[in-house]
Length: 255
Image (cartoon, rainbow, N blue to C red; front, side):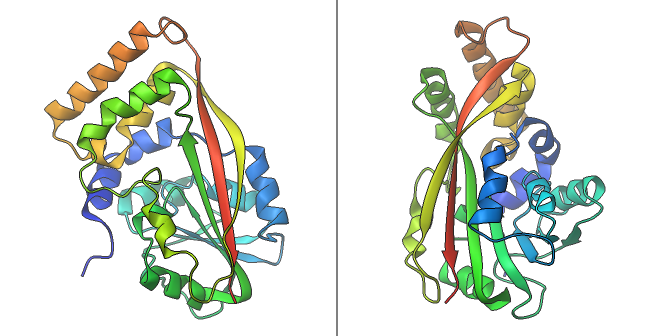
């Protein structure tokens, strides 16, 4: 049985290039979180589970820890392997992590846990963690309190299908989790700056269920996004714009 949701496998396979261009990085506060809350430092080992193209993997490398990236989608993993030669890239999934028991001080899932939030995944994560190791979850979430950002979401919503989403909150249903302590939560403000084509158009094109659409439907969505940009005073005609995010982080210690 395929462990990877069909929408993720197709969408991220087709949208890997747009993912690299359009997804934001992570704020400096996330690096502080990795060091303070997850205890990452030289001589530690961390697994980046569902590592994608390596957007967050870079922050893990900055801690000095040994980083192992586990990613099931070949096109995403190829980007990571090319860009981050110091990281060990492995094909695998949350349900089948290709590593031995008790090998990691931490497992981190960036923009990913909602795809595999189930008891089976948590059991496998617990297996590879050392006693007392930490599971960390992190998402960059578009700030829906800004009107044009909320409109952007409304353009995409009709195409979601059955794709799991962080915003829907179903992933929280697996907590409190067996063999893990309580989930602790923090958040940081974040901004993604760049050209509208990069930080808005490519960002939308990188969404799994948009990337998985047929060409005509995908072009229609992106045309709607371009019309939104053209009709929004703080975006229209500007060579650089700012997209507001909230970075939300969570951690739970293995018991």
